Image 1 (spheres, rainbow, N blue to C red):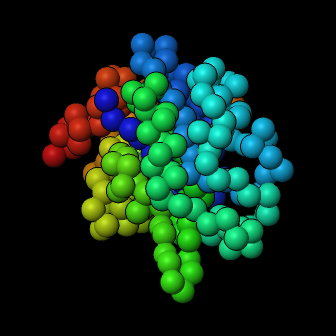
Image 2 (tube, rainbow, N blue to C red):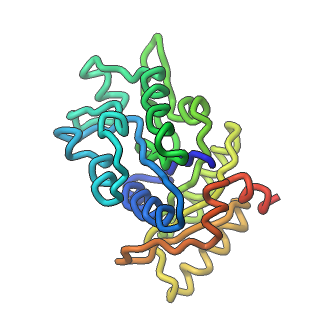
Amino acid sequence: MRNLILLGAEPKVGKTYVATLLIQALKKGGFNPGYFKFAQSAIPSIEQSDAALVNNKCNCGQNLQEMLPYVYQSNLPVHLAARESGNFINPQVIQERFAWNIATHPMMVVEGVHEVICPLIMEDNQVLMQEDLISKLKLDPILVLRMSASALNQASLSIYYLKSIGFAPVGIIINGLDESNYAHCDACNLIERFTQTKIIATVGKRQRSIKIRCPLSEIANPRALQEQMV
């Protein structure tokens, strides 16, 4: 079993919504996934967080403080909210909380913070990027993309960056796909062709379910997906 992280190609791609649908699909397929997120800003309390929403929708049975170690009320990016509050993210705390979750849920769906490139600490004496935690926790990235006129460009730039820092994304999930739209279908073909990365699932417009385009076992074992693209 592998642990996945959903990374947004741009703001407001619907990572939390996609995480909820993916976890529900995996649970129906006989897997026992949990949810995790490093940090979230711009929320009054953890009870109003993405973690609380997913936990309620998916009945994950996890402790909110273990699912989401850092919560900031300030309406700022996480690294600025942490600076303002003085409560900086400690990678050791992240690792410990993550370990608690995988002790009861052998597969974890992690929701990334903001977009692909995301500073979590950006100070003169310390820098922590989201990619550092992805590496420490040995997470396998899945790119979440919203179908739009810029989808090909967003996907190509995001996948290129991830590969340039040593991550081979195991797949792409497209949100807002209209399968009756010829341009959308053509864009899917172009995205796979240019990124050499498989679209593993799609979420249709105004749909409350996810369409998995490969066996669920391949999502639970991303190495199989990587081998298919070679």
